[in-house]
Image (cartoon, rainbow, N blue to C red; front, side, top):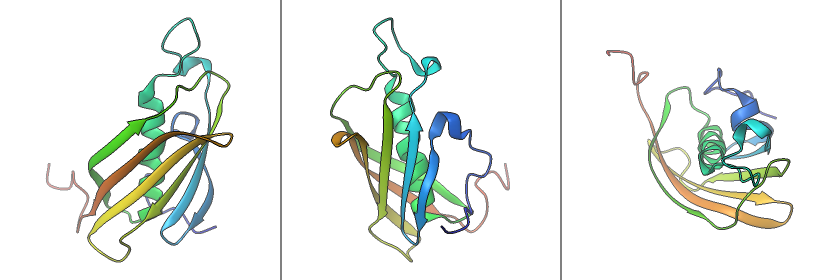
Length: 130
């Protein structure tokens, strides 16, 4: 597994744990916990699934100054507390400043989320002059 070069302070209990990291590709695993619950039925709030997918996209690029510019996503199936999710991210445009990263999130063998994430690698941290 490659060294993680970005998002080093991410709370992996909320965004997932990298289980595979290769050049331009990664997989992140997330166990949906009670603190992600949106209602009494055990439905997990979509923001956690999006956060996981975003983190996977950042890791697929794996540059210190990678940022998300936009995302086109679809939530395909609901997820529940105790579900184990795997996000699979693939950088379709490696070695460019602008990266298009395809992310798919699975629960078991079912696709529950898909998205195309547009990421940019900046020369310096986005907060450097803020």
